Image 1: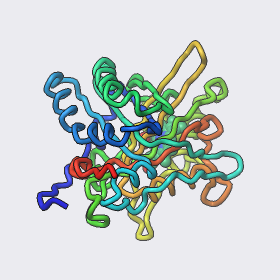
Image 2: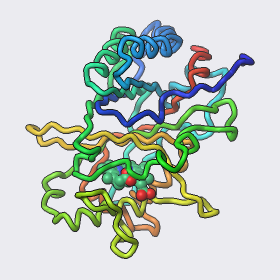
Image 3: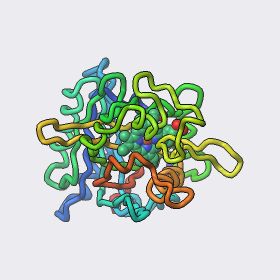
Length: 317
Ligand code: HEM
């Protein structure tokens, strides 16, 4: 490995984005696919530079991630990040976090959808005939950063008094993969009519925060199955464990489709997985997240977003 290795990370902690396009692809079994993808990855930082050079005020960022199978295909000589594997579904009976395929993911963000679209067309131009999309979702900033269910989303992210890098990026614990991040995504569809029938005070107990001003409920007010109670986790020494969330709402009002695309970057996938187990199985078992009574995941895939340095070291074997 080259001695100037600097572990320059991708923009995993960027602003959640006013507008987002997120695309999950599988790689087609066609001749020349590997070479095309390797070439695209070699040029990824140049494409990013070009976008930022052309549109300096766009708040543009994009990340690329690889599923476990694709990682092993392209980074054979480098090895595999400790916790990268195909996502194993989590089921507590009442709710299931499904596992769906995905070789590559692109998470594109900007302050105008046009910039996201511009980058998506570059991906399509370069890779279109060697990949097939599993899902493409277009999301938007809703009001003051709300999820489509009407509550501000992202408040407890490690942004203000905690260093997001500490929670989103691998450090010395897996040195070759330093600066990389485990990216887990789930596309949720909400039962909006059921949700809207709940009185606001009940909705607040589901989320654990007030709807109109985002203030957290007190410990006495918060039920044990509130979303921000079950996802609030600590390590054995009582230190809070965090991930960096960049969820995005999406909607198609005429077809009554309302959803949240969950996007979580983490230093260790076991942190995200523990949150998911608390939501879908419960701790204690059966104390599942009340939010799941109104939210069903239709996808669930784990990716790894390598540092730029590693991206440039793809073996393509
Ligand atoms: C249906 C999809 C989801 C929606 C609509 C949603 C929405 C929200 C909202 C509104 C909050 C409160 C504000 C905030 O602190 O951000 C929150 C908190 C949080 N969510 Fe979610 N979320 C979803 C899925 C998930 C999943 C799948 C995870 C983890 C794998 C997760 C992890 C968290 C964490 C860690 C917090 C902060 C808890 C704390 O206060 O310490 N969320 N979410």
